[in-house]
Amino acid sequence: MAAFFLVAGVVVVAYLIFHNICVKGKTCKSSVKLHGKTAIVTGSNTGIGKKTALDLARRGARVILACRNRHKAEAAMAEIRRETGNNEVLFMQLDLGSLKSVRTFAETFLKTEPRLDLLINNAGIFMHDTTEDGLGMMFGVNHIGHFLLTNLLLDRLKECGPSRVVNVASLGHNFGKIDFNCLSTHKETGVCKSAIDMFYIYCNSKLCNVLFTHELAKRLHGTNVSCFSLHPGIIETELGRYSKSLLLVLLKPFSMLFFKNPVAGCQTTLHCALQEGLEPLSGRYFSNCTVRNVYPKARDDAASKKLWEVSERLCGLS
Image (tube, rainbow, N blue to C red; front, side, top):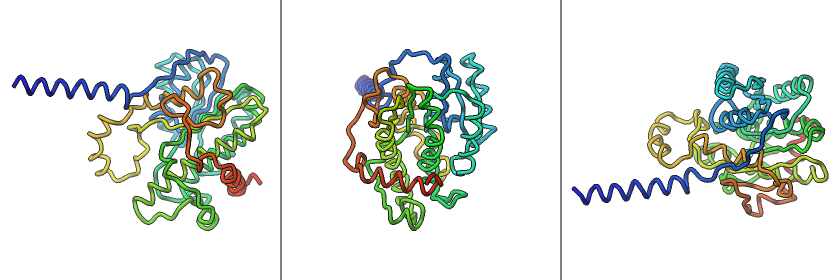
């Protein structure tokens, strides 16, 4: 019996060490205050987006919760106001799967809000479907919606600089590829015939996030706007809410032990948004609050330029 408790104790201690180092990871060390600053956080009614907005509100920022679901967003807004005592937390409706909605959001924001200091493109979806504009859902929401939103707000970001754009990507971008022929034919980065196809299409959309950031940094050179992409970690959030419920039930015990919670998951986002002195690293990719090197395909100048041009055509900017 003593041997059992000894082994159990060793296992528990080993897990706690593993959890703190490998699962929980580093935290954002910035103590910067944000009074007088305005931030937009997309997909901020749940998960790491909500925790990101909560942290920014605690620092005194005016935070715009840019979300599709009004009911959930207003509940999140009330909760964040209550927890932080900051009443400058507002909801503005944004459906990234609708180019019309993105344009309406940007038009309303520019008319009503004089500042924009932080644009955090956090929203993401893991789902096979088609947007109202005929784009693949993951490509349309995870990349094109944010691409259009960022471009429509760039002038305001430049006016209010130094400002930052933070694109929440994923380690999954390493498994992605951009098939421009498929984009031309299907308005999606892959054809989904199976669950594994859906996974790779998601990874493709995350590679788009990293390439978009790479190209955006070049186009912002000489301005006072910097941009970053990041892997938040493997998070227990609602990203997979459209997946089969049985799979989610089976994964629950594993995810509780080995996935980050949303508070840990938003730390690299906050680091990229707030940490002083990151401007020389504009365009780079971060993980665990640390700048990381990426594979050549994620910093390919020709591919990032072509993706930008294709994205402009697909969302009507060219």
